[in-house]
Length: 211
Image 1 (cartoon, rainbow, N blue to C red):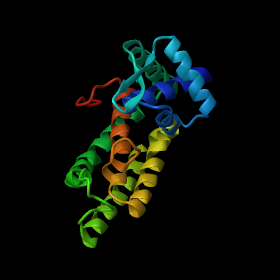
Image 2 (image 1 turned 180 degrees about the vertical axis):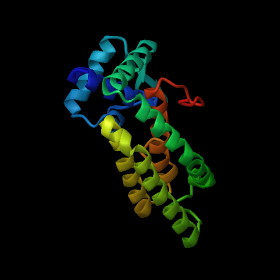
Image 3 (image 1 turned 90 degrees about the vertical axis):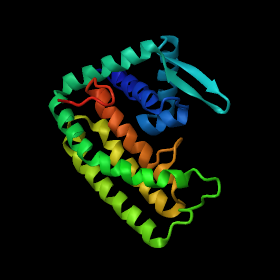
């Protein structure tokens, strides 16, 4: 895979994972320079792979149908070049073993995090907050372990354990939105993107398994 194709893959996959991605969201996920991201997005728009979308105060880049086909092609090419299908499948299997407990844990806090009056951890007592943060720390360790072999084969997956830990650190200081929030790289958002990235890299839809 050429350098330009790798950059295109990182940027198109960033748009795909975000759904509607402004430039900042792409930068956070592709981890490339601002000039390069802007240049690739402009070329992708010219090629009909992405387009601008806006609804009320939400706006950014979205993949077109042609863009979805292109990113699927690039992902397949990447996996084949790295001979990484087996390690991807193993990583997905390990991830799915830790996914259920994480989702259940976060779901217990999501309603509280949407309340307009919520600051910090809302009305939760210190024991409940401490238990949540301890559980999330374990989830972060589990995620790092599940992706360890894959990161060697496909280094772009290395951002996920780092960004999960960064969100957890911010949750300790700033509260629940860094655990359950949307529109930012919260623990929940990073976790969901890992799952989708594993599946799409294997050419699977959500709800399918690598078997």
